[in-house]
Image 1 (tube, rainbow, N blue to C red):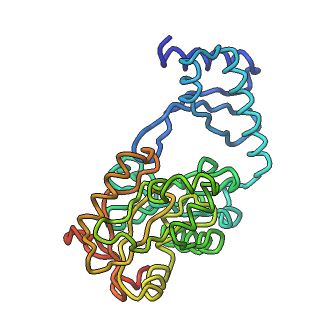
Image 2: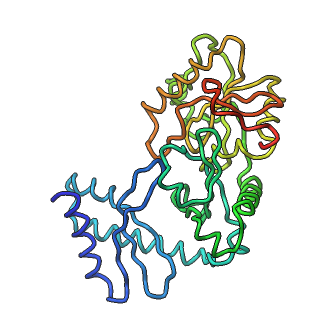
Image 3: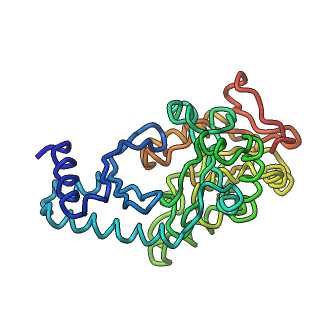
Length: 321
C-alpha cells in the first residue's frame, strides 16, 4: 500500500466509525518553511473548529509493521484527547477581546514561506518575517496554536498595527525573554550530570566555540516555554539592554525558530566564521520546520540589527527594537 492509498483507507475507516453528522476531511495544511502536510480533520456538527491530526507519523508506523486497525484506534484516541483540549479551551475566536490574552508572535524565514505569508498579516524584518498566532494550549507546546490570517482582522475589525501592538505586548508579558549562558541553558533542560561528564557542551548543542576564540561567551535567548522563542529578541529594548550588559556589539545566531545564540563581537571573531557555523548546524542537526535562517546578524549598540555580510539588506534601527 502506498501513502496515498493509506491516507484514503484511514479516512474511509474513520467515516464508518462516526455517524453521518460528523464531517471527516483530508486537508493539505501549510507548515513552516513551505512544506504542506496531510492532516485529518474530524468535525462534529455542533463544533465550530476541530483539531488537525497529521498522518505522516501513522504512515511511518504502518511501514514498520503496525496493523492499520491499531493505527485507526490510535487516531481515534488522538482525536478524543484533542477534542477535550478544544472543549476545555472555549475561546470565542470571533471576539478580539477574548482572543487578546492568547496572542503570540513568531519569527519565520521569509523566503521559504512566501506562499504562506500571502495569507497572513506580517512584518518583514531583514530576511525574516514576524507572524502572529493564538496560543490555544501553552502546556501542549508548539503544536497547540493557530496562525492568524488576514480574514481574522476583518472579523475582529482591527488593523495590522493594532494586532502587532497587542501581540507584542502580550508576548512580552506572558513569555518574557530569558538570556542565559549556553552551558547553564543546556544543563537545565537537556542533560543529567552523568551525560554531561561524557560530552562537551558544544557537542551537545551543535554550536562549537569559534576556533579563533575558544572561550568566547555564548548566550541563549528564548522564552520560559522555549516555544517560538527566537521572536523575543524583538521585544522592545531587549537587544540594547544586552549590548549594555556585555558592553559591546554582538552577533545573533539563528539557532532555530525557538531560540537564538548571542555572541559578543570580539575583535578576533569574523562574521564569515559565524555564518559558516550556522549553516553547518542547520544542515546537520535542525529539523526543517524549525529552520530560521542561514545568516548571522550583528547588533550595534545604539544603532540596530543588520546582516553584516549583506549591506543591501539595511538595518532595523534600535528605536524599533
